[in-house]
Image (cartoon, rainbow, N blue to C red; front, side, top):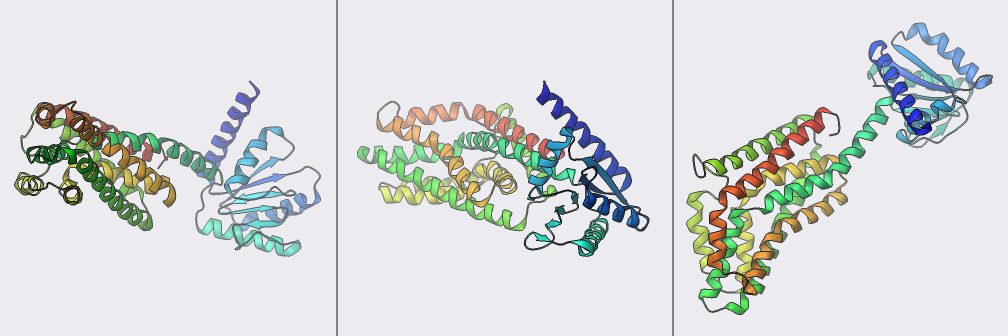
Amino acid sequence: MRSIYRVSLLGALLVVALFAVTALGTQLIMFYETGCPHCARIEAFLNSIAPKYPQLEVTRYEIHNPKVHDLLNQLLVAYHAKLGSVPIIFIGDVAMAGGTFYGVYATPTAVTGRAEEMELERVIQQAIAANAPSPLTRIKNASSSGIAEQLTIPAVVLAAAADSVNPCTFAVLVLLLGTLLVAGRKGRVLPAGLAFTGAIYISYFLMGIGIFSAIQAAGVQRPFIIAVSGLAIIIGLWNMKDYFAYGKWFSIEVPARWRPTVKRITGSVVSVPGAFVVGVLDSLFLLPCSSGPYIAILALLSKTTTHTQGIGLLLLYNLIFIIPLLIITGAVHFGYTTTARAERWRSARLGKLHLVSGAIMLLLGVGMIIAVQLGYL
């Protein structure tokens, strides 16, 4: 009960403080101690400059009040500041604890006396000029970032699952394995299938790193996230359309004019190196099938992960993407099915494959837009 009470009280403090800064302007939060001479001096200084800065709203908390300890700790973490002697002040991008300023110099710097007051006034001027948000928004943003990171892995898994239900890739692999069987190269089915799948994995992963790095370097903005989310929704709805009216207008598959070329190249391959080359070429031909989910996830990763974390999740995404290809290869090699049966299964379920893939893409796009609106992205 005590923890619930503290959380509720902290939430109330946040709401009140956010309302105050919205209504009155730039907020300065000060933690003080009753009877502290240093606090009294800074308080007198703030009162003396108050007429010069009517936009400044000072919110005060007595540091010995246990109800505000959580708030102070969260602000110190958000500002990368250390607990020091009072007064402890937060405004704009700067924190001051025990006369040490954080965020205004390259390294935390302590000043005293009149220099401290001059520096504090300069920080106040900068915050007002920049129309700086309340220091409490840093707590909100940190919480939002944590939630976004928690949602990223499920989103990656769902999008990869949707992308892996890819009738285009299934068709090429079945054709490749069928060519080997017809040519009497049954012993090469497994290595050729693995080579083809490995080429798909490597090609998609490298393309993903390139796009991910470019998006992250450019900096992802809210309009871009919304645009990508909208694209995911459109692709999802269009894929679902193929469950009810397959082939009407156009389908998100390899364009019909490309298919003879894909079949001709794939049908001529009877070696393991050739299967790898076909996999690389296939990854380029299949971009119309897979670019939607991939780009949506790359945009999400560039917003919620570091470069190293993003690469790790791309490895996971592409591993999930190739799992059906590994299953088909193993099933044909070990005799659990034939290429003819696999192709009949694929053809009979094209509509359902599009429906599943489209539904997941729709959920991903809607979820990303909701996350943007709630401030999680």
